[in-house]
Every structure is written in structure tokens, then in C-alpha cells.
Length: 154
Image (cartoon, rainbow, N blue to C red):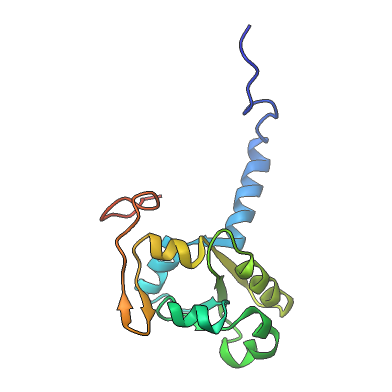
């Protein structure tokens, strides 16, 4: 008699349910590699919003992002974000709900929105550029988040 499986204790979802689930997840989020690729390609109709505080923004932010702290979204979104743009929010990283809260505020305003999973932390860890008071900098990619010198290809 084999050991009881922790993985199979609850059976996998039916394929049709899995399709609906994963498609829904991707409609709510984007990863840093895809956001980076779109920014590099000059994709239009997308606005990246940094929802962190001013001190955090000054410490470093993604080039091209709009600084709009979560607490200011309702009051300032109309002046800063084109009405027809899809908003992609980010905050510190996976241990922070700031981007989720900002995305909720944009959704309440009737704006199409996605959250950039991994946030600023994974942007930096994947070796993408950030703007600081000293200018544009890039840290080496962390080999636990991205293969050295390459895209993950996923």
C-alpha cells in the first residue's frame, strides 16, 4: 500500500475549471518580465503606476512609471492617467498588498487594471533598470529569479 499523497489528497480541478481559473488569474495580473517587455517595445495603452510613498519612489522606481500613491488614486487618477489606458500597479513586492489596494481603487473608478506580481523587488531582482537620484542603475539579475543573461522563456 502506497503512502497517502499530499498533492493528490484533493484531486486536481477538471480541465475546463482549470482553464477558467488560470485565464482569470492572468486577467488580473502580469509579471515583471512581461511588463518590462511591453515597456521596451513601446506598447501603447498601458500605464505603469507605482503606488508606494514618496520616500520609496525616491529610493528607486521603474523608468516610465507614474507615481501615484494608493491613498491618492481616487483624487488624482483622472489628471494623471489617460481614461483609455490599462493601468498596471506595483508596490514593494510579494509581501506587500499596496499594489492590490491600488488596483482595487482603479477598479472602483471603472478603470481596466492589472497588478504586477513581484513588484519593485522582483523588477530589481530580475536585473531590470531603476531610476534613482543618482540616475539609471541596474543590479545583476538574481539567479533565483531569472537565468543569468537570459529570459526565463516562460
